[in-house]
Length: 355
Image (tube, rainbow, N blue to C red; front, top):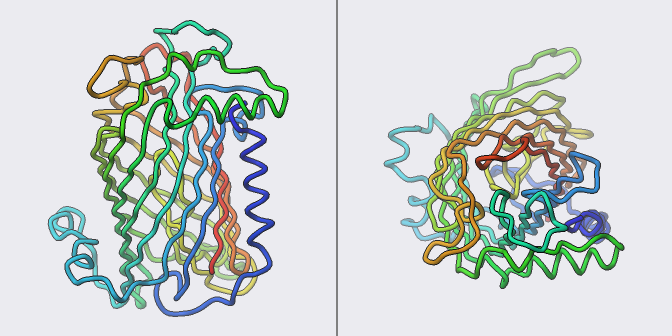
């Protein structure tokens, strides 16, 4: 199991360390005048409830998002919402806006179906690991009259793919601790390569609709688009999330690690008590490059023929209690490479704390 128990332990430790010392909520900008920290873990165990390591098998990420920044240079504040992009996907009328910056560190592990084999498996997904830091610039514009909101996010990933990302060490050392079988094919992993990736995402949140006013049941819809460019992943995507719950919080739903599309690390409860909801969504991506399937950029390495169109279906639940948000997302992902025997499933758990 690639970090299955380790992911759960890290998630529990994050909750234990951070719960109980959370300040009261502030008003004003989207997410209030607060910073946020986020801990996330994604694993196929959470979806299959089985001792499997297959394809995207584990992801970990810790992130920090600043308070609203009022000291950004004007050119950077303007850059956060590019005018050219606004011609295609415009923002509407708004009377509130805020800018934030953030930083995250993440790690992801990919393996073939057969982790017992030591030989190279040309018909299966290659071994790969991705260790990186992410620097983000975020802009949120909202209307206090209609309740609509627009979120723009720039993300710059800098890291390394290959043995330097320590995928073999992380996976097999943890397997020793829990007494699981070793993954024997890491000698065939994608080779070392620096990774640089830049992405831009725009999301729109509709006005809240009172589905059942007497019970307080509400609903909204959050469509988004994304473009990513780099030697790690180059693609364009479009998706949307439908939310249904009680006192829907003013945010864009939970975030994800791989690929990090949709959602927001900040949140703002609308009322006292449980701001909780269920959600469902769909996302499609047209992929030009994926180093985890295509292999290294400038030299030969393990690789396999990828599919150029991939889609995700997601279902989940979110609970916002006081100054913490807990979420679980179940992801159904279509086949990513030629000859893949079946589609994948994995679960994503995240916890956010307002500081």
